[in-house]
Image (cartoon, rainbow, N blue to C red; front, side, top):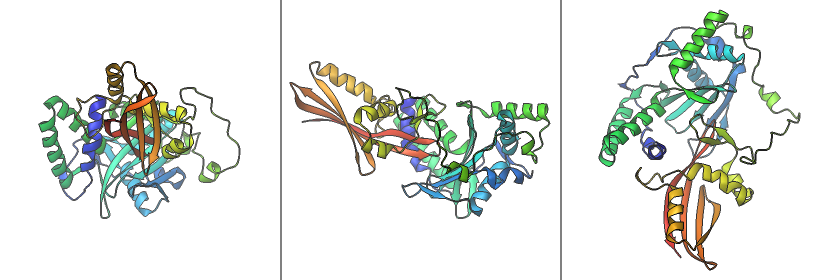
Length: 356
């Protein structure tokens, strides 16, 4: 599964164009319920644009307000996103942050976040139109082409798994409770229970929410926060679980590779790449860890050392192999990364062994 997800990181690049028409998601409809009280500016979080290859912080404008209003009025599997948001807020007695990220000029996502929960909805953009969860005509064309290509390269089972993951990534919402990925039915059941037990009023969130996110002014306050507890497995407090057994890196990865000691950063990078297959290779290829192990078995008298550095916008990871103190080969690994509001994911672009 991990190998297939590395392949997915490549094929997802194809789904970047959006137009009118296409294929509707059978789980999605719309409601006319007024959720304007849930779109108050006190719930605004961050707006991030990474479509130009760098992170730019934006303010909530009419465009983002429209995205928020549209997301709240989505019905997924017959239940309003707005009611899910209210139900989770009541469950934790905690208000949410609304965060929006533009990954490309054509795609982004809106996320409702609590300390231990998340609802994330991907969307496409074309001109002034926002398309949430439905496939457009260009999406269908691209999806069909990628599907054909995957079926030519992999078995039917592997190709189906890749395409199912692709569809889920771009055309299905993501739900997280207590840090774990859950299905929509779990969130719906939770929200229904809260509405029944607490007789919730969507226009009176103050009646069941005690904790609100800090305002922008409070976030910028000068009061010193207590230092997080030291974790030898995470000395920089840089890791956050992704709900699927993996991690997000929540600090600036390039600054840390440049500024931190290698013996601190190498274990962090290993968590992301050791079980990864380069995205330019097939799913049956060896992982990075398997390649290193095979080289040590091939050269049992060799020692090795790892070097990492930033080359432009890439992270380069090199394993040098020595015999009698003289380097005779190296495994060169090009590491890429992708940003989201939750943190940074690392992946292996390319890996090759070279004799010296």
